[in-house]
Amino acid sequence: MINDEVSMQYYDCWQFSGVSTYVGTVWLAALRAGEELAKVNGDDAFAKDCRQWFEKAQATVEEKLWTGSYYRLYNDTLRNRRSDTCLGNQLVGQWYAYLCGLGEILPKEHVLGALRHVGAVNGTNSPVGLVHGITPDGKRDMTGRNGHSSTITIGETWCYAATCIYAGVPDLGMPIAERLARNIALRQRSPWNTTWNMDPDSGRMLWGTEYYSNMCVWDLWGALLGKRSLE
Image (tube, rainbow, N blue to C red):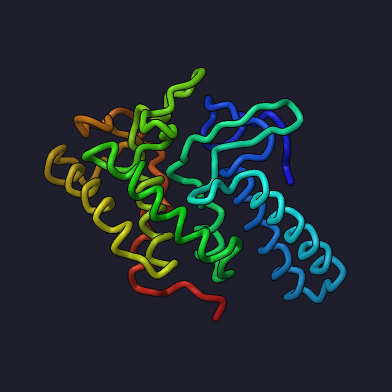
């Protein structure tokens, strides 16, 4: 499992430390994809390696990040640093796995529990969409140079909605996705020139018309149509 001080990832100015839920679940999905690709190419040795690494990494994620109702932001036992912030996109690796037809990379009951918690906490902190980071006391996580929790992003909200659909609980994610869609089309009146992020309170578009998470946007429709599988 990747275990380091991490800032070179999607949340570029939000410093994580040790094992983190964002990087960790992406790594789990990558290992499962590697295993399947190895099988397709007849590389049994590498497939076996990926499976062993996956099982060890999954155990680490469960041990260090699972709180009982969601996966904490990060946990660095070597440096004694931990954040119990609830990340809206904590199951991004699970979304990747669903997208590729790989099934669950985490225990299904934990996937469902985390989706419910994110919906109840991150999904109710804004009338527009999913707030990125919410602390255990219900506040937006603005620690350090992190400005991500002061915005709503189209990719994170609709990625969450797609994950809910794949997991069999569409009613958790679709109302939040609809709020964001209504903000873009009806309140901001800009359905064809969407920014990557928006103000979580007013819904005002901020910046990022050149990168608005295309795959997250289009996969929501793929998830709704049920077109994703290994077959």
